[in-house]
Amino acid sequence: MSAESYPPPIFLLAPPRSFTSLVCGILGQHPQLYGSPELNLFRARTMRRFNQMQRLHMGMHRFVAQVYAGEQSIEAVEMAKHWMHAREHKTTAEVHQELCAAIAPHALVQKSPRYMRRLSYMIDMLEAFPKARFIHLVRHPRGMSESYLKLNDLPIQLLACLECGAVDRSGDKPIADPQILWHDYHLRVLRFQEMVHPDRWIRILGEDFFTDLDNQLHRLCDWLGVSTAPEAIAAMKRPEDSPYACFGPVNALVGNDPNFLRSPQLRPYSRKPESLDGPLSWRPDGASFHPRVVEMAHQFGYH
Image (cartoon, rainbow, N blue to C red):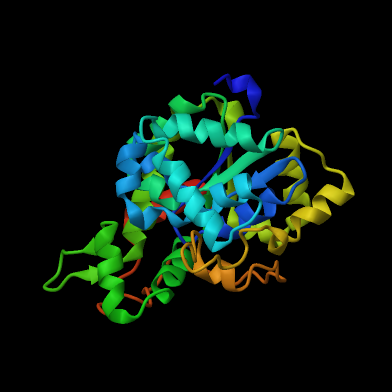
């Protein structure tokens, strides 16, 4: 499939709880762009393997149903499952390219925070789409960590952090500590950045983005080479208009952050002070940020 048959996709790179769902929803409502749920395709290299990873499928089911059936009904999702199985002989890169062509002339905007778990996933993205654009989205480590832990009850927090390696084992008992996730995910993103042409890379601090939304939207649209007309900017401020900004049918219920699906509207943003100093609310031992986290946060512009 020729890359000239569709615009290069746009990938948001960030850990979970870093405003990715809302930013993807905002960008995806631009009339020249198309925001998707979490597709997760690059978690595997073949569709045969991807089809075995059922935990990751709901975003793909909803996307394929909407694009090819024009709806996300139970029946359309069943069609999407058959569509995926019919492509078991293909690579996930080929299927991703097919989806980009299906929504052309719109450019796909996609976020899947699980891609940050391995550098190889991001390398596969670049090999499949050499002209893709990458938005590195950053949230303050304190805000990201507190938001991450709020998602789960206490017994589940440790399991969730174990899954992504965010557990401090230096003491007598393991401690769920999302600052490790924040640091390690961004470290992989920074390593990946070295492989991407500077013209195809931009970094955004989430707090700056929502504090000065109009200027930030114009900046992003200019960088992406899409319209900055008032009607385009206005459309971006209605992420709730996306067909994916709600829960899906019972056989593909989520596929995105459930908090975003419950309340996808853009709300007034009030930036709260967040310090890199002092004890962390989730640490029972009163520890503060690790020096490597502080150093990286300074690199991104936090103080």
